[in-house]
Length: 279
Image (tube, rainbow, N blue to C red; front, side, top):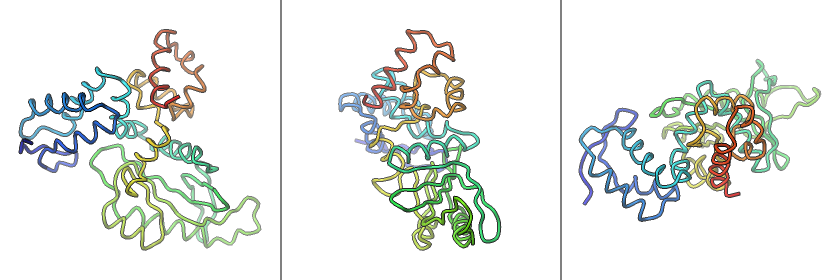
């Protein structure tokens, strides 16, 4: 029977511990039922009132990593997205690259003229004859949701760019749709406004079944930060060279040579991310 012990979320909210939610997240990592049961049993044995979700995550992650690194890599996906910070620019590059693998042509950090002022757009994407103005809202801290102020602000920028009289300027493309992308979650009010205003909203778990997590898992487009073998310094070096996906490192392995990684460790890293990308 599930213990009625209250745990503390990253937002500070106290909620009952749910073994069902923990089990689901473990299964999403690819862990088999035996592994899921073993971790659940161990975590439940060590529960105490007021334990943080962060501590529960750390314990489950450590056990998964001992079982098989690929499980741990997938389990830490949400945290790996946070590690793309702190500036948010690597997140923009990640979203751009994610879209490229879905058939979009993208440009990052483009300055375009609006009816009133110029705007620097995080990502401009095009596909099937349509152009999408995409703004990325990155949060480096867990527990912070994307409130209605964000889609309100981005919708006003989108409408200003749409209204620009730039038809004669070389390279000008009037956007057909505005997007708001965040690594966290949207509040209910933000979702309601986005739907009413005709904005496309994309977050960790929205739209249902087609959020960031679903897209990443479906296409096996994992950020380099999911690696359990690369150090923080190595990940930042790779991000600074625009290597944001594990797939890119598999293609450009020479960056590991630049980092002075030994052949033995290099082989382990490439196996880890190769398994993750199902190559």
